[in-house]
Length: 193
Image 1 (tube, rainbow, N blue to C red):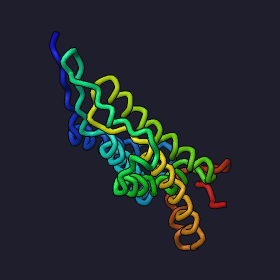
Image 2: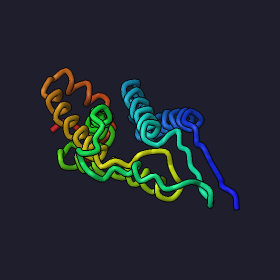
Image 3: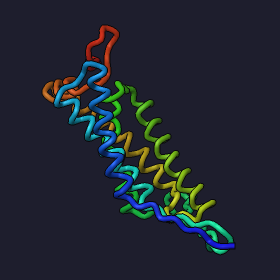
């Protein structure tokens, strides 16, 4: 029996994904009658942000399977919070999810702190579980780390606090309202509460 290996590179995945999300942004906004330069710019930022998160957390990905694929590498699963923490990784993972609150607000009208933090937690959980499954089944080259889950969730919370503080400024609030994808019952972009 032979060993099989597969390397999924980053750029051939991320560049077409980013471009596809740019096109999708234009189509969604045009269909909803919300096509403006500001909304397109925010939508493009959101699409490239999603591509960057995918690249930072999953790609490039090296996988191997078969009888000679190698030993399970238990050090790739970090299940002890704080004890196995790499401080720079914790900071970078926190920063990675800072924009989430603003994007959820503008794109989907999510305004509630609990929902923002829950979405940040669930997004991070999905990433870490995917990484763990790939490590356990296909000898993936990524790390599944409970500290990443904590830092991503913290980033979503801190991003929410920063965004809410910025919303106190009328100029910032008007700029956000002009970019909003969310609609009210009357069909106009949602007002800030």
